[in-house]
Image 1 (cartoon, rainbow, N blue to C red):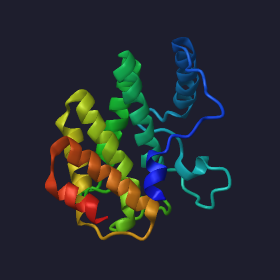
Image 2 (cartoon, rainbow, N blue to C red):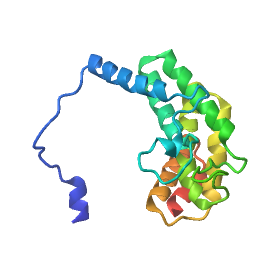
Image 3 (cartoon, rainbow, N blue to C red):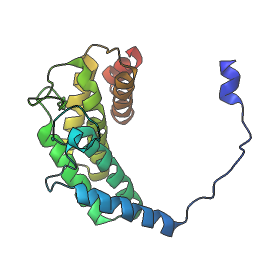
Image 4 (cartoon, rainbow, N blue to C red):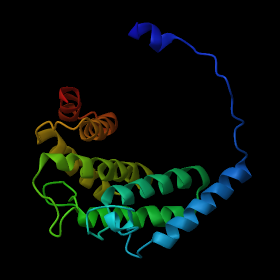
Amino acid sequence: MLESSRTQVYDCSHTFKSPTQPEIERAFRVVHDDSEAAYNGDGSWGCGYADWVGADVDMDRPLYADVARRVLGYLSVHRISGDEICADRARQGLNYLVDEQQDDGTFLWWIREDGVKGDPDLIHTTAIPAISCLAGHEEFGDEKYMDASRKAAMFSCNSSVVDNTDYTALGVWQLAEMAQLTGDQLCIDAAIDR
């Protein structure tokens, strides 16, 4: 049953027309304008959980995953368009992440004033920033981004497996990206073990 669902091609009841280049550029400008409105001027965006409607955590620190997702978006647009504003924002975000990374390779989880430290669950706050640093290294060739990603990968390789499937999936994604770029057997083995 499972094997047939992998190879079965289903008829689609609706197809969507691909957007035109001007439509894509217009959509990006809207999103970029929103991003600029949330930019803190230091390579970070937003106020973390304070931006979430109904959040029961009274913290206003930017969330590293939010910064990292913006970095990945800006890197993608820069790669396609060569837009230097995107390159600049990506570098600022990457530098912010490198500066915020802990000595053990993690990125803190800001659900309390001092941040959560030394916990295997930090794989979920660490994976996406690590992936964005790896992508930044690929785009710009800056070794500090590779070093940050490598430190995060070592944390993920050496931490215990967590019970949260989402966290584990993020960690496997991180390790797979690192292994694909570097061929690091430790990352391959850790990703498989998870």
